[in-house]
Length: 254
Image (cartoon, rainbow, N blue to C red; front, side, top):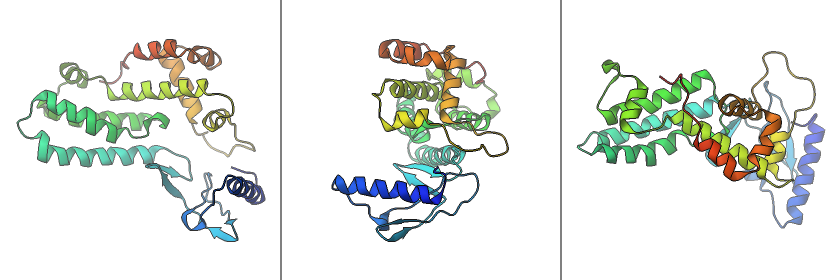
């Protein structure tokens, strides 16, 4: 976030000029402005003499971004979408006399992609981990022909079905994306955003966990690699991929 509205206006002016040089035009009727801040901040922006509407949230490529910068709503949104998909599939497809192999194919090809859309950039908490695992097992128990009343551990059901924990799949993808970031050539925007540090005084209260801090801690907890050594390990694609293939499931998944 820029330090003032004037800085934002200057940045937008430079952006508009660069777009014009590249033969592109910014459509003010299709553009919106959003300020990342814990509190609501008014920041009027103008493009081509027209004011842009300021919003508290917007979707980009199917991912929900909010002005608070939190990911909980985005994760909850996809859990809800996956739940709707599960009930629709259960009533029309899964409940019928399909083989277990066919049901698992539906799980992998439809349910999991819906539930984990955009998961590479999630910042998970204990609450969201618990909700993701509950959504995962809700489908797998139906595939196995069980319910919560059977009191069978989730790990037993996964082992019986030959399915790896969904949280393991998410963590592996997040660490794989981290490797891509380190291997990007200098000047790439995702890499610059990864290393960027906010300026100004930190607001009061518990600091938010940024994705860089989250995934760096993930690499340390799951692979034993500190942040200062990550770049040296990630630069070797084959080595990094081999480490991710050996990533063990968490012991606290149940």
